[in-house]
Image 1: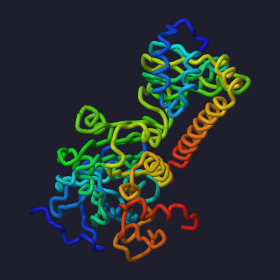
Image 2 (image 1 turned 90 degrees about the horizontal axis):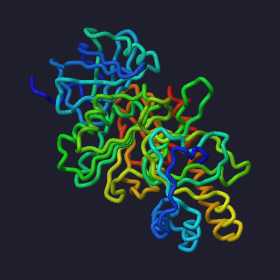
Image 3 (image 1 turned 90 degrees about the vertical axis):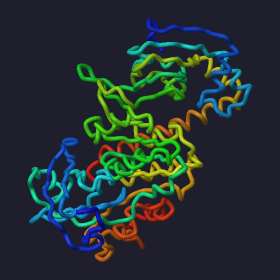
Image 4 (image 1 turned 180 degrees about the horizontal axis):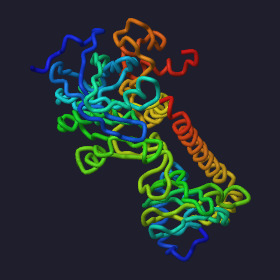
Length: 167
Length: 280
């Protein structure tokens, strides 16, 4: 989240943030007190089309939960066109590098459209997870599911790309 | 001549047809049109023909044209073997042999009064295209009509004109994704199965038609089941080295099933167990 110059940050109304968090698929079935705790470290953010949500190698200092808009995860080699690995959309969380050392993003994420998202401060979120192991386990489990799902899709993607001629 | 169940149907007799148009869909996929003036073929969405390149051989090819227009018969073919490569190289005016149609069609009647959901991967859009055209012609019979389709890359998307037209048609909800893209592609990137959890339809009151590589259909069925679609309302179409087309030779056998005769369209419970057996 280091590309701040395009961003409009807003701490927003805590109640509205709590409602927005509770309604996001990433937070589905989380305990009310856990959503409340998350809302304390959440702000709403708006980005214009073309802005970078995150850059490879930059500090992974936030969890982003997309509310509206489309984002592409990209890998770029200097001088080449970026390869779009996947697109993410409203309802998707972006990234898990904020949870695991060295806390650096592995890909670029660029807004394809104007994007509205909830941004959770990673350092504060990790502190909450350490302070409340039940919450920590719930969130780690959720991120684990996300990783498994993305791995599942990536394997399917690989099979479709590499075994095209067998179809 | 009126449209009829021509004498070739269900038999091994091939009839000659002349190619009228060759449309290049992608770098390795063409759609070949024939105008069957002499032997019009009545078919139902999901059925296939055995297409014969004289001197080369036969291949089973799904029919991709409008079933209500038997004066135009289309087959969409990707060049992967001897016969399909030969078919890709043919020019208008060339004669080919066709026998059919064969096989069990898509269960469009079962989808009446329900949401009709179609999941297609790559050239898998060809066998479901007649079902889409038929459903849009009788749009009032269905709830939502949803198409989720994917391809390896933007250049591998087939029936782009149809996709553009369907996008503009409020009768069908079209979602397109590709496995890989560079900047310039403004659409979704990711496997088609990723669309299943989020696209609006009523899983408990839907009939789903899926067509594509077997692995893709397996992933699709998993996602559909997780979404809450009853397994018996998920249909797949299978293709496996069909030769005779009438369930005699056994080349397309998958366990107890002859795909050409018992399929190619199957409900998920009919074949789910078979797709997990490595030896088959």
